[in-house]
Image: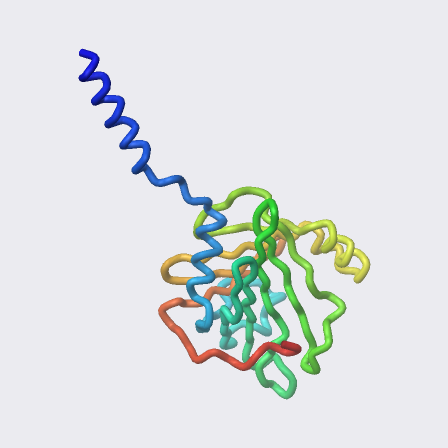
Length: 198
């Protein structure tokens, strides 16, 4: 009887040793983005609000341009909205690791490379999220910036990034506001020029 119990205990312990530890969803999310480093993808406006009418039908490109173990830079380019009707290369989404999760910031530049008055706003994750989707409620620093620049309507912003097998989707939501741009991983394109100021 003792030998049977001993064999069962050994089998149980062996099973525990081979069971993989649960993957942290934020680590998996970050790794999924980093795996596409250097790649660029075609996209389009996926939401339908009047405030975004100037973007409707415009070609868009997102580029996972630079990656490190703790930071991923993703420029967002929009055709037809830059100087003289060229490409607008003013926006870069920056995802970084923090001690408590992930952070999303928005770097906005002018064509001459100077920083826009509204730049480096964003937020930190407040929950684990999933391996494919993370949300970033507005942080206190951004609320202060929005208030100071007369844009307090943005003080309840929640941004999101979703990365699946087929697509990358960036979103912004608050009461009365829904912005989404989606990029098809099945439509890689040549990497665009560097964003303004980079």
